[in-house]
Every structure is written in C-alpha cells, then in structure tokens.
Length: 202
Image 1 (tube, rainbow, N blue to C red):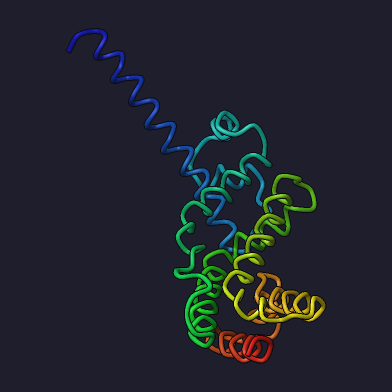
Image 2: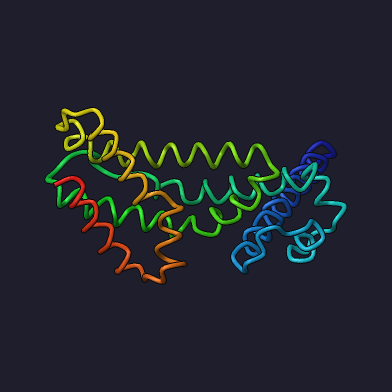
C-alpha cells in the first residue's frame, strides 16, 4: 500500500469513527427520551453514549443543536409513517378506518419525540417552529382525507366548525389526552375517533 493510499485509509477510518460516535450520541438522546428524561444534559448524553464530553461538543455546538439533531434523526426514521395512501379517496367509512389507523401508528411512533418537543419548545425557537409546522401538516392531512365531505358543506361557518372539530379530535395533543390522561388503550382510542369522525362527517 503506498503512502497516499495509507493516508486516505486513515482519513476514511477517522470519518467512519466520527460518524459512528455522532450517531451514538443522537441515539443516546433518544434512549433518554424513551426513559422519561425529556430534558437531558450533555453529561448524561455523554455517559449514555460512551462518547467523551469533549467529543460531544466537537460534534454539536450546544445542547439545543444536539436535541434538534436527535429529533431530526427520529423524524427521518419515522418518515414513511407520515404518508397515507389514496388520501381523500374511497367511501367515508373506509377512509375513517384508514385514517385513524395511520394516525395512531404515527402518534405511537412519535409520542416520545412529541413530548420532548413540547418541553423544549418553550426555550428553543427552532423546536417550537418545527412543532408548529407539524401541527399544521397534521391538520392539513386530515382535511385532505375528508375533503369530499367538507366541500359538501355549503355554509362557511359549518365547514370551518367541521375542520376545527377534526383538528380537535386528531391532533397529537388530543391523542395524548385520550391515551395518557383518559387512560384509553389503542383500540379504545381508535373506536372513539371513528365514532366521533362519523358523527361530524356522515
């Protein structure tokens, strides 16, 4: 192996090790979230990941950047769960069934990140902005799913009320309330949502 190849190999090895360590740090944040520590300190993350505190600060400028990167990593993992096939198509009962199943799957996958984002949003403008974007996106997806019924409402006030009611039923805040404050299990939550959406839209 010539000197150039050896040098390139060393650089590649350092890059790979850096990438592994960086991902280990992000995964440590997500593990701490899962255990209920929604506002971990850098020392806790370093201890959990096995990466030195000095290295953590080489990878991330501060705690805000670290938490944001961990949230982004989880979002990337769960991206396929955000999509609903054939949105707005099919009979209303079938759409309600499909929508509630997908929304609960997404909520279950995002539950810990949602809670951590709520905690961080008060002090981190970027996290707050991302959380608001998610709220808007979830609302728009629900409105698209039930657009045929909403468009049939000639009265503007009635259409607006229906959109607000759908939001109240299906946003993450509402699902958190149903699952963890009312104590409904997954099937009970889906049943409640399906009955309520049918009452609003049928």
